[in-house]
Structure formats: structure tokens, C-alpha cells
Length: 418
Ligand SMILES: [Zn+2]
Image 1: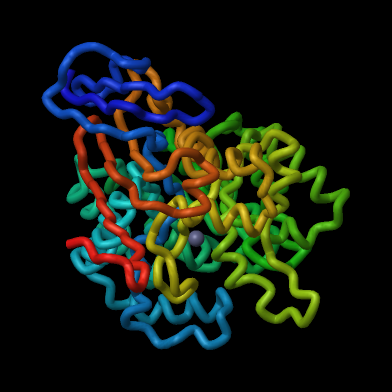
Image 2 (image 1 turned 30 degrees about the vertical axis):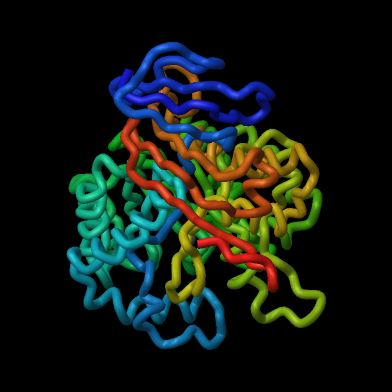
């Protein structure tokens, strides 16, 4: 064996286990395993989880906050306007540098899989996509990266975008993006979805769209996306992010759409912290929150995930990025606070997200890919509560990050050590 993690606490298990790794794969999992490895990590009873999965991150826009003018209204339209000012001058190498800083922080926080969204359209052409493809190459061995060809200015609304999407896929993008709700008319939104599904089928790729990211109860592209997914037999290969309009739907319509989403096996990425900041900006009180109906989705068996989405950009000024922080915000926003709900929240940044990306070799079991994170906490609850350091992060069985934090309380009057 190449590496062993001793005294690991796995979710839901009472007894500590050892995890052995050979050639990048988990070989065995069990208490007090015999044998020696070239590298020995003592987890000391800490929680060991498969690496975090972040399926929605605009790495091409990340850290523009360091240079941009402030988003005074805090709204999506102003964020889009500010981004466009930069996008006109994007250079792939510069995009890759900003993306790289964010990937580096993400890996240190235990994320081993990222799905990066690259704006593709007539303003920035393919330069954002080329930048993120470059970052994907530069981070080989540190984390797994997918790049989404994402039509941020729409497809019908931005003549020429469809051809650019096709070209971005040819140049190596892995996922077909979409933004149907942003089109001018309902008919265009439906055509947008048709075009994306055609691209996905032609290239045999998964789809990840940003859907109904608005407070408008009439924004109904999720319904059509679910129908189209079923019609085209693309079940289990589509993810829809945001879907905040669901919060404004009447209960009967929301229940119908949720049922369609479940049947189409669409994953919903609820990036709750982003919507808390960007949605319902023009509401007086009571102020809506613009969050998809998480508990209803979970109750209907929909695969729900949560992602970082933005890191210090025109949409959102924060983001470490850390999927444990994302999960904590999700717990607050969706009011998921019971013991089993905390586990559900943790699933959203681990197993559910892996299912959405169809990572069949994800998890802690023999034969699975050894992408692991040792979290300095004894349980999911404590991990969420204390947001502790990630002691070790492994990608394909290699340690790619480690953290130590020495903290000490100094009681006045007590003798000082050291
Ligand atoms: Zn987004």
C-alpha cells in the first residue's frame, strides 16, 4: 500500500477505521488494518470524508472584486453590467491566474472536484473558456476540473452565441451551460433550452443551466427544462442552479414543477448564500429570500446540492471558497437544523454533488478514487458548527494540502508556556 489513514471517523460509524490507499484508489477500509505504508497519516479520530464537490463556480469572474467598481444596487443586472466591462478585455492567461487562486484556496479547503462556468458569448468570445481550460490543465493532479460553456448573455438574445458554444465544446469544454430565463420572451427561453439539449446530445455531454434566477413568479423555464429532459431521454444528466422563482410560485404550481423535476431526475443547485444577497433587492418588508423550496425538493426525493457560485466578484463580495461554509449557509437559509438535516446539508456538498456529476468512483469504499479530506472535527455537526481546518486533503491518494492551526487561551495571571 502507498498510504494509510489511521483512526478515521466515518460518517455514521461508531468505531474508528483505517483506510489504505494503493495507486490512487482506496484498497481497504476497516478497524486496525495490518501492514505498513510509505506514508502514514493519523486522523486521530477526526472525520474523514470524500473530497468536497463544487459544481457551480464562476471562476472566470472570481476576484474581479479586487478591481471593480462597487455593485451599488446589489442586483444581478448591475453585476452583469460590471462584469461586461472586464469581459471585453479578458485574456486567457489572466483569467487562468484568477481562477488558479480560487482553485488553490478551494483545494486547501478540501474540494477535489470543481465545475467551473466560463462565459461564452459575443462580448468575451472564447477567452474566458480558454482561460478556464488552461487552469484545468495547470491544476491536473491537484483537483479534477470540468469547464461549462455558459451563455451568460443568452443565446437568442446574443446572436452568435450558439456558434461560440459549439466551438467552446470543440475546444474542450465538458458541460453545456444555459441561462434560459434571461431571454426576452418565453418562446426564446424554450428555444434556448432546445438548443442546449441539442448541443448536449450532439456532443454526449451533461447540461448545467442557471434557471429562473429571479423573483418573478412567471419565470417558468424549469418546467420546460424538466419536460424537455424527459422528452429527450436526458434524465439524470441535467442540473439546474438557483431556481429562485420557485419561492414565488403558488404552492400548487410549485408542487407540479417539483414533481416534474424529480421525474426528470434533475439536480437542483441551491446556492443559497448568493440568492440571499442578490434576490428580492427591490422588496420592501416582508422581504423574500429568493431561495428554491429546499425542503419540498428533498421531501420529493430530488437531488439537491449547494455550490460556492461566486468568489469576490460583482455578484457577491465573499467566498473563501469553502464548501463547508456553503453548507453552513444552506443550513441557515433552508432552516435545516435537525440532526438528520445536518447530514442532508453535508450530502449536498459531497455525495449529492458527486451524483449530479456522475462520479461513480466517489466515496469511501474499496476501489473508489482516494479523494479524501480529513476534517478537524469528530462529526458532521461539529464540522458545520466550528468550520475547522482541513488537516489533510488527498487527491488520487496523494496529499495535496495540509493545515495546522495552533490556538491557545492565555488566562491572565496563569504561568505562560513557551
Ligand atoms: Zn452562478
